[in-house]
Length: 127
Image 1: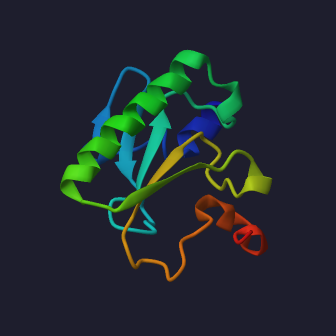
Image 2: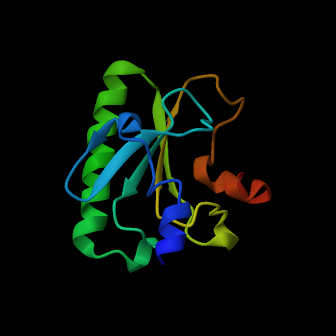
Image 3: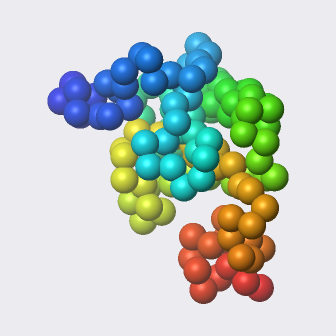
Protein backbone atom coordinates (compact mmCIF):
# COMPACT_ATOMS: atom_id res chain seq x y z
CA UNK A 1 0.00 0.00 0.00
CA UNK A 2 2.85 2.46 0.77
CA UNK A 3 4.27 2.10 -2.76
CA UNK A 4 0.79 2.61 -4.20
CA UNK A 5 0.29 5.78 -2.14
CA UNK A 6 3.75 7.11 -3.02
CA UNK A 7 2.98 6.75 -6.73
CA UNK A 8 -0.58 8.08 -6.49
CA UNK A 9 -0.83 11.54 -8.08
CA UNK A 10 -3.58 12.53 -5.63
CA UNK A 11 -1.75 11.37 -2.49
CA UNK A 12 1.30 13.39 -3.51
CA UNK A 13 -0.50 16.54 -4.68
CA UNK A 14 1.32 19.84 -4.19
CA UNK A 15 -0.50 21.82 -1.46
CA UNK A 16 -0.59 24.95 -3.62
CA UNK A 17 -2.86 23.13 -6.12
CA UNK A 18 -5.62 22.74 -3.51
CA UNK A 19 -8.50 25.14 -4.19
CA UNK A 20 -10.67 24.21 -1.23
CA UNK A 21 -10.72 21.53 1.44
CA UNK A 22 -12.61 20.14 4.39
CA UNK A 23 -11.75 17.51 7.00
CA UNK A 24 -12.02 14.55 4.60
CA UNK A 25 -11.53 15.86 1.06
CA UNK A 26 -9.92 18.48 -1.13
CA UNK A 27 -10.57 20.06 -4.53
CA UNK A 28 -8.14 20.73 -7.38
CA UNK A 29 -8.51 21.83 -10.98
CA UNK A 30 -8.31 18.85 -13.34
CA UNK A 31 -4.89 18.67 -15.05
CA UNK A 32 -6.65 17.77 -18.33
CA UNK A 33 -9.87 19.82 -18.16
CA UNK A 34 -12.74 19.19 -20.55
CA UNK A 35 -14.07 22.70 -19.86
CA UNK A 36 -12.92 25.83 -18.01
CA UNK A 37 -13.26 25.21 -14.27
CA UNK A 38 -13.26 21.38 -14.47
CA UNK A 39 -12.52 20.38 -10.88
CA UNK A 40 -11.83 17.14 -9.03
CA UNK A 41 -13.08 16.43 -5.51
CA UNK A 42 -10.75 13.92 -3.87
CA UNK A 43 -10.93 12.25 -0.47
CA UNK A 44 -7.71 12.34 1.55
CA UNK A 45 -8.11 8.62 2.23
CA UNK A 46 -6.41 6.55 -0.47
CA UNK A 47 -9.27 4.35 -1.62
CA UNK A 48 -9.87 3.06 -5.14
CA UNK A 49 -13.58 2.35 -4.82
CA UNK A 50 -16.10 5.11 -4.07
CA UNK A 51 -18.47 2.52 -2.60
CA UNK A 52 -15.81 1.45 -0.07
CA UNK A 53 -15.62 4.96 1.43
CA UNK A 54 -17.39 5.41 4.75
CA UNK A 55 -20.54 7.55 4.70
CA UNK A 56 -18.84 10.45 6.48
CA UNK A 57 -16.18 10.69 3.76
CA UNK A 58 -18.74 10.31 0.98
CA UNK A 59 -20.81 13.13 2.50
CA UNK A 60 -17.72 15.32 2.91
CA UNK A 61 -16.98 14.87 -0.81
CA UNK A 62 -20.50 15.96 -1.76
CA UNK A 63 -20.41 18.89 0.69
CA UNK A 64 -17.17 20.06 -0.89
CA UNK A 65 -18.53 19.55 -4.40
CA UNK A 66 -21.49 21.78 -3.52
CA UNK A 67 -19.19 24.48 -2.11
CA UNK A 68 -16.98 24.39 -5.21
CA UNK A 69 -20.02 24.54 -7.49
CA UNK A 70 -21.22 27.67 -5.64
CA UNK A 71 -17.80 29.29 -6.04
CA UNK A 72 -17.58 28.29 -9.71
CA UNK A 73 -21.06 29.67 -10.37
CA UNK A 74 -19.80 33.07 -9.24
CA UNK A 75 -16.34 32.83 -10.82
CA UNK A 76 -16.83 30.89 -14.07
CA UNK A 77 -20.56 31.61 -14.60
CA UNK A 78 -21.38 28.27 -16.27
CA UNK A 79 -24.81 27.50 -17.65
CA UNK A 80 -24.86 24.05 -16.02
CA UNK A 81 -22.72 21.26 -14.59
CA UNK A 82 -22.04 17.59 -15.21
CA UNK A 83 -21.05 15.57 -12.15
CA UNK A 84 -19.46 12.16 -12.45
CA UNK A 85 -17.48 9.40 -10.81
CA UNK A 86 -15.61 6.76 -12.80
CA UNK A 87 -15.84 3.81 -10.41
CA UNK A 88 -13.65 0.99 -11.72
CA UNK A 89 -11.59 0.43 -14.84
CA UNK A 90 -14.62 -0.71 -16.85
CA UNK A 91 -16.20 2.68 -16.07
CA UNK A 92 -13.11 4.54 -17.29
CA UNK A 93 -11.27 5.09 -14.00
CA UNK A 94 -7.58 5.68 -14.76
CA UNK A 95 -6.32 7.07 -11.44
CA UNK A 96 -7.10 4.43 -8.86
CA UNK A 97 -7.95 6.89 -6.08
CA UNK A 98 -11.59 7.96 -5.76
CA UNK A 99 -12.37 11.34 -7.30
CA UNK A 100 -15.53 13.16 -8.35
CA UNK A 101 -15.60 15.32 -11.46
CA UNK A 102 -17.39 18.68 -11.40
CA UNK A 103 -17.52 19.81 -15.02
CA UNK A 104 -18.92 23.27 -15.73
CA UNK A 105 -20.95 23.40 -18.94
CA UNK A 106 -21.47 26.43 -21.14
CA UNK A 107 -24.20 27.14 -23.67
CA UNK A 108 -22.85 26.15 -27.08
CA UNK A 109 -19.93 24.02 -25.84
CA UNK A 110 -21.64 21.01 -27.44
CA UNK A 111 -23.98 21.11 -30.43
CA UNK A 112 -26.54 18.88 -28.72
CA UNK A 113 -25.88 18.37 -25.00
CA UNK A 114 -29.11 16.42 -24.42
CA UNK A 115 -28.43 13.15 -22.62
CA UNK A 116 -25.50 14.61 -20.64
CA UNK A 117 -23.71 11.86 -18.73
CA UNK A 118 -25.47 9.22 -20.83
CA UNK A 119 -22.80 10.16 -23.40
CA UNK A 120 -20.28 7.88 -21.69
CA UNK A 121 -21.80 5.28 -24.03
CA UNK A 122 -22.22 7.42 -27.17
CA UNK A 123 -24.78 5.12 -28.78
CA UNK A 124 -26.99 5.41 -25.67
CA UNK A 125 -26.91 9.21 -25.31
CA UNK A 126 -30.02 9.88 -27.38
CA UNK A 127 -33.25 8.20 -26.44
